[in-house]
Image 1 (cartoon, rainbow, N blue to C red):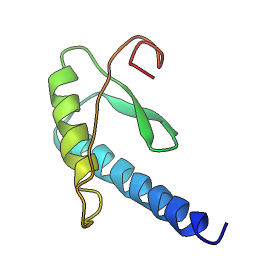
Image 2 (spheres, rainbow, N blue to C red; image 1 turned 90 degrees about the vertical axis):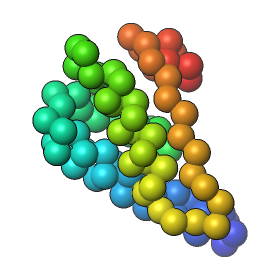
Image 3 (cartoon, rainbow, N blue to C red; image 1 turned 90 degrees about the horizontal axis):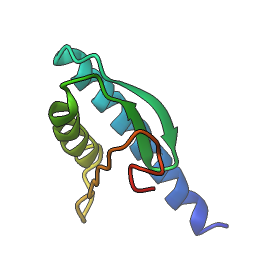
Image 4 (cartoon, rainbow, N blue to C red; image 1 turned 180 degrees about the vertical axis):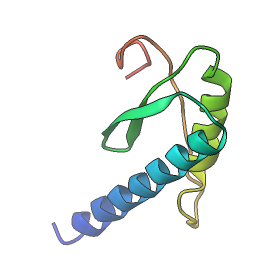
Length: 88
């Protein structure tokens, strides 16, 4: 537990920072898409019509830059009408 707690706590902090960055970027770009749910290290986004490219780019850019680490944060994006269809 002593080894795992700092790792999970850091991951939780990083996803919170990522959510703030993504939400701010959506607002700055005047996008109608919105974050609807966070599950562990994933964000579920309701994407408005015609915004999928901008949302994908925003997620990769903002989530990948949420923390500066010795190794890069990688971001993968899936799409679908459900979480299952999106590849999860």
